[in-house]
Length: 120
Image (cartoon, rainbow, N blue to C red; front, top):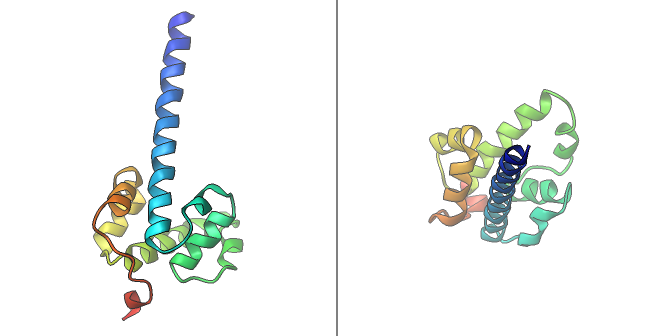
């Protein structure tokens, strides 16, 4: 029983550490885009700010509440997130399939927010 509790504690610690690291990454991405980093901590508002970063209308938040449609919208948001930071389609695939690797690359790498220039 004691060994099970130790394993459970270790698992919870690892999950918490990964969660905190991803929050730090998201905070950094928001600040790179000129938005307040603390916005990533507020539920719902963090999605509103993310939609502003990727230049999508706020009403897309409603689409994220619809099952199956939310998957498509989330992929579109990841595509646009890669674009506004000057990354290509390969990086988008990485954001979708390996977010634990590509979010830190986006946050702490040399990617710069280009915003409106991404459309040009």
